[in-house]
Image 1 (cartoon, rainbow, N blue to C red):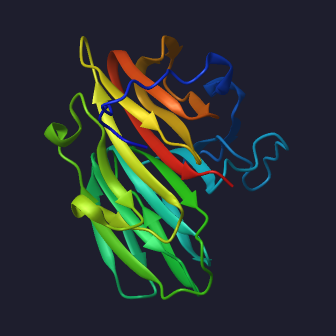
Image 2: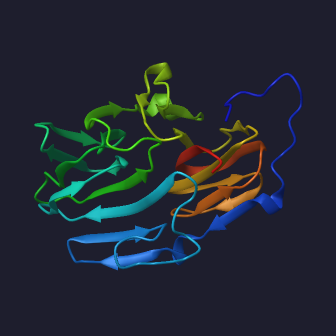
Length: 250
């Protein structure tokens, strides 16, 4: 995808190629300490129409109560990141890494040949709200790595900020998945365009608020598959925060 318009006019993505995944159709899990909504099949939730979208395998919209969290557990051959929306999230892993990030923070892990980690809410009272996302890498058995990145409000305001890419450009986190990932916030008259290139596909996840994509209204928790090349316009934001995935068509 390209964030800026090209010299030659680009047609809008055809409406029929924009497929909404409504928030209320996601798989829901309530474990008391954890409330989670699954955009794709996960754990005991299975939807044959939503097992993955190209290299995008998991989007879990997680809310963890104060003092709770995920105990140490293993992963292998996934690119995994947590994008914090509210509160704080702490991480510890078998590589010796540990960190705590707040809203706008990203914890990124290449699980590769194998790593164990835990994620927990360091506050005893305040909940944490974050998206946990898994991408499928091009290569298996890679050396596990861990990285943290913070996006400020200015980085994302009215624009799409690249924070994950295959080549690590613009200070983004380098991934082994055939994907680029952007974050943006939109409110009022803020607007931006995005171009889906030939051979690519896109997914928009509305993390908070609401906005329109090519005139299609999306609400918090909605996902939107972009199944063709062309121009995408983000507008009409109402305290919206989105994550946009640029994926190699598989």
